[in-house]
Image 1 (cartoon, rainbow, N blue to C red):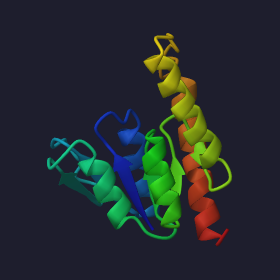
Image 2: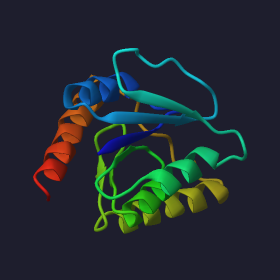
Image 3: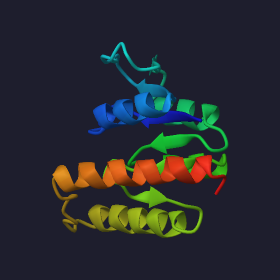
Length: 149
């Protein structure tokens, strides 16, 4: 099992490193620019610069069954699920094959409303509860994979 992080704006990289170290998993940080990786974690920095969605494309092409993707990008989550991976966003929301359709539809509706001039607001600020929920659900995903569920 490997963990793939859509790293450009990911606020939970340190948490991913901590969990990966505990379980001995490799982490791929995929980004448009280089960033610092702790020396005590099995991690690889993947810098992609070809085009706007290059990080998403790299993750979708390299993720496999039972790997875990960390991303708030719903279209990327859908692509990863199609490859048999598990997906969690930085706030701890777990995407599944059963829930991804609703998430994609909500994303499209919000985009349409913004195009029509409606202010849909943004997500609430990232907080301690989000970080805690992420850690709890990431551990739950890992345990499910290890149990074969």
